[in-house]
Length: 242
Image 1 (cartoon, one colour):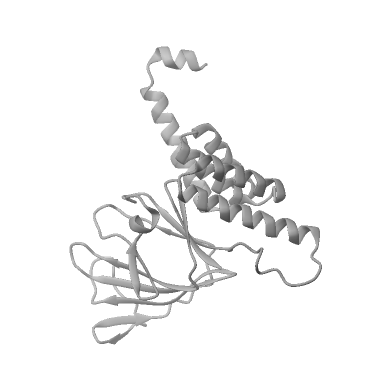
Image 2 (cartoon, one colour):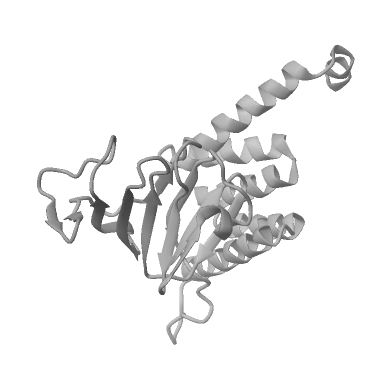
């Protein structure tokens, strides 16, 4: 399994089994840290820590104090995805693994700003991990679809959106009921500037999986963006588009 990050049409995958999520309040300078595991069931939080306390960063009653840090173990089932917001007035989220920390902006290759970033567990290409022996047609289709989706994300990261979309098309052909493939293709269309196709893919992803929050958020944000663009368009251009 890998950790996938998605924000503003860009998707990045990290080959990590565990990581720390960190954030420092820009005014009160209070550090917040969370240890996470990437599992086949989703993202599992292991421990949370806060150094001191401040407005909105108070530790729960069960937290224990050690060396200036409050520690506790949240009792949460693995989550399919985690949304990271940013008001723009506080410090940026950081992902730490293998002894190094990087901001979301650094990982995604663009300033995240106030955009929501969604984390989720995702599969690596399965072509090298197949067990020896015969597989069913469904298993082969799922394996190949995951490979094309993974390669599509790599193309999208390199801003080769046409190549990414071609790979997502193949993934969707193999697994037409997989909502996250439509989501990934929609994000590539959005990054390319093709808003109508992006909106159609986000909408289809929501139809397939109404609980896919990132697709809901992307559809809402893009619909508002299209509405605002239409409101600013000169009347002559509006008439020409009808």
